[in-house]
Length: 473
Ligand SMILES: *[C@@H]1O[C@H](CO)[C@@H](O)[C@H](O)[C@H]1NC(C)=O
Ligand SMILES: *[C@@H]1O[C@H](CO)[C@@H](O)[C@H](O)[C@H]1NC(C)=O
Ligand SMILES: *[C@@H]1O[C@H](CO)[C@@H](O)[C@H](O)[C@H]1NC(C)=O
Image: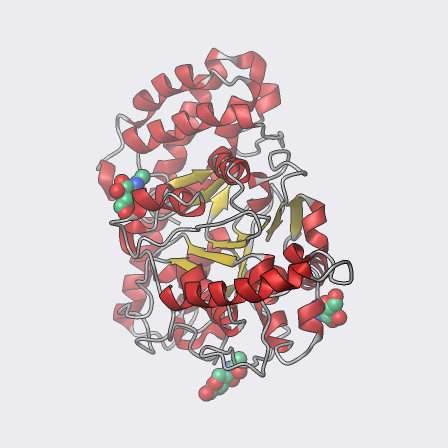
């Protein structure tokens, strides 16, 4: 930090003279390149999950860290949130390393993690991006975005998600909270432009009809508002890891960049160029853009830097070849798929077969308990308010309704009540696919939570051991 400020100061002196040169040097303060007078670049990298079954999320984020560092963005300006339970996980066949591609290079080495373990939560994330240094001073490294009016911010989030929600290990980030944080950052002139790359199921629902188009914020999402996103390098491609090694959208944009490391076109590529290429290459879901399209015409390097091979960069990513046919699995099915794949192996030792079958059976039983409880709440609402059900849709087939900011207090209130009285929603990714119906109820009537919450207690009263319903996929 010390050194960095010193360098900025030195350049400031040079820059002042540049400003005195009239006319032929236009727009000195809006330089697009990696130049101190164009403002600083800030990067926030977040993997919102934990556990071996979600290996891919932390692998993507480590890979992103390597690219960003290789592009010369100083450590001080990169803030990383990841639980960090993968590299030394007992299931890791190569302890101390993480890969993001079959036989890939270690992406864990050198990653500075600012917030680990239980510090990875949505409250901290919001404080970090809004620059609440005071609140974070005794948490992790305490690093937050200290942005100014010329700064560019890149936020890359990877995890599970559902209608209007991104998941953290213990809690949810709702679209209205993210939107409020972005509004605060805009109001306090904490950025010039923000670019978000979000990989999660239904990621588009975080921004669709919500993110404004005039605040210099652009979001690129792995999927539209009603689609799953996909894990990749799964099944046989993951070899001894027995879990997907990456996510399709993340791996695609990063491998495209790795492949052009020494290519000057990488420096000129705009955000939209990148978007179009990634959208073409990701075939399982629709990669989408939301927000201020002006920002899409900026160079991608404005946000994430570029790899200038003349400079020494400690963490220069190794050129990796894209593996064209990636084995993909819908994010929501990744665990079941991995267990089925292992059970299909005839040489599996009996004890291991037994362990895996038990795991699968338990998961299916817990799914039924979750379904039964949520379905019961739905039926009680349907009985009390039959007139709204044609708008809301069926429990198994919710209608497609557009979210609006004013439905979120109702939605959040219902989901908090379920977590309190039934089972932790954030801790059970299986439930994510079932939440859209509750979002719909709140879209139709933003006061409906007052009634729904009364049904929640009744529906969950006979759930066996409250805290035993954990990690159901
Ligand atoms: C990874 O390496 C192993 C042997 O080291 C090889 O059998 C396998 O085909 C490789 N996988 C890929 C996807 O290249
Ligand atoms: C998030 O983590 C901080 C500590 O890092 C803790 O004080 C706070 O209560 C957590 N928030 C939630 C919602 O869990
Ligand atoms: C990825 O997209 C580029 C340009 O849009 C195209 O040339 C290339 O063939 C695509 N690759 C794959 C694997 O689809």
